[in-house]
Length: 342
Image (cartoon, rainbow, N blue to C red):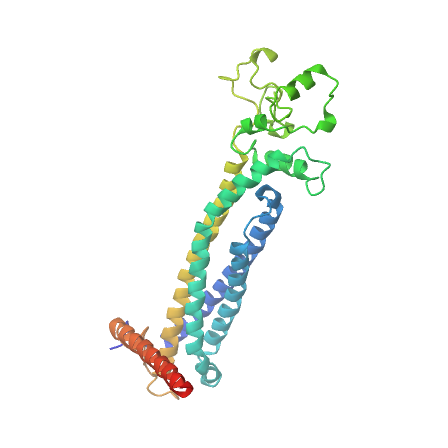
């Protein structure tokens, strides 16, 4: 007995074909959206590449671009089939392609599911890449004269301003590195010389942060130097004072940006899978309803449509039997080859 059978007359078949045509073209629009998001995601990764030490993975945006293009092609084809389905002459040329097309749709849904899973699973890899990349970016901030790092200062400053963040974990990360180049240090100055000599690694460390860490919304002029020295500023206590620099780390800010983007894309892909499943089910009903018409020359006659020709249990049983038969055939072929060799 067929699984989920439905009786169709001409009016129901026409409504189903028209509804499916609209859903297929809606899916084409979703495909364009996925393609555009893939391009946007790839551009954003390129823009933040230096913040990720050039180790970012483009697997997810590349897959998004691929599934977006496939969605446009697959659903445009499905829309054309639905448009021609009520014309027996036009439908006849599509009929042999429908079974392979439905199998292609199943494979496409599997690819969509894989892409959605990667959108959620790859977030941890993004977090680790940002942690290492930002650490190196802060370390190389001062190297404005070094080839390959000339624009690191500009990139990091713009990132801190755009994402309202400071440092990797927080603003104290700047206390642990020398972020002012020796080119701009007066080594003849005793204070500078003492600070450099007092450090084991010979670095000029200070409790200061770059200007890009300043919060312009603070009513007090930015205090970016001697942040932990209360006596250096009037009416100031760094332990209780609400600092007028960004206290959020850039790793947290950038990860929040990318993770929210990837989560939103993952949810959109899951919605796309549901939409594609509705397309497949509707097309199956439409094709079976057209194939089982009692009198093909009489469009007014009734017909039956179904999702599966047999029940779910029988269908899976037949599928397993076919797989076993295929396995046995392969074994026979391999055995024949070994005998011929002997």
